[in-house]
Length: 490
Image (cartoon, rainbow, N blue to C red; front, side, top):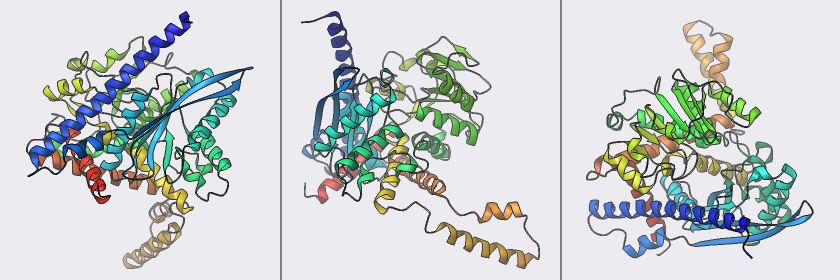
């Protein structure tokens, strides 16, 4: 029997599935565009259409439904885990908690993970998962019970496994949920020495790694640093060198948007002039205090009441600024608003924030887009470091930090003897200090983002007028996946 509630659910479900399919269609269109350019720029057919279809196709998508007794009744939840490509194992990808989760969206995100991992040379295949739930509807104790049941259902099918499928946090999940999942996997597999490597994004006290929470946002900052260091590419935007004083619009101040904005403001002296959230926006032409805004959101649960608040919405993405950072959901820029975007540079901190149609409109008007498959790869890069840490069972830097300090100390002593003058104690402490785990993580992330940008830029500028960075990045990723398949005899 259909009730009003049933009809509302079907309407919402139908809308989210359509959005998911549009997202998946956008990724496949970008993929096919890259294949066409590979055919144009290389002599002979290096990737057959059959192989291209195999690379593009999602291998499998699992739907799990499970009941949990809560509040004196049984609630049934629906979850998904999609494996796009297992040319490398384990496959990798986050798990999101959101009422909009559906199979098409999860498949699109899994495909993007494949190309992202290939592009930054992280040896994982692509996967993604989700649970259709609004976390705000449940207490922490209830969420823990739901999460552990979800983990049980996934573990039964090896969809959580340190050598086969390694989830991570995504929208609506974080360190807490990953710790619950890892602990539940460990309970189910008490003799697995690598049990804590079954997920990444855990608290440091539970096998996580320093710098993972900030990784995606900091990776966005490093991506912008790499772009602004490339004079040839920067000239295409008409922007002056350096991030200092550049005005920035941030759409979505979740984990990724917050850390990207904080790093850019604090370390590069960029001006975050607009922050857009679901309940309005904050505008300050002199630069928003991002750390204060983050504290306000934690206390109040909203941006309302913060200085510069306005009852405005997504139209603020169309404001005048140098850089736009969409850092929330997919498809927030589409054919209806793309022509009104004024920023000369967009960096995709979210997954798939620009539809394929909008991408064409923006490219035609000369807007430069730093694509998601590169820009937000910081999360999976540092997840890779965490996974390695879990398998090796030793903290990064533990073996070499003091040895490094002793070497530098000896060098400083030698310089002091040579010049017959002592350095200040403060200077000596700063110079001699060995690299901590956080230092090494940030160094590895910055190196990955810099090197990857150089590869993409080289393809963009030297391969028969490749139209944009997204196509160049996708071409690199596809070639690497194809090479992996070839080594498997496919």
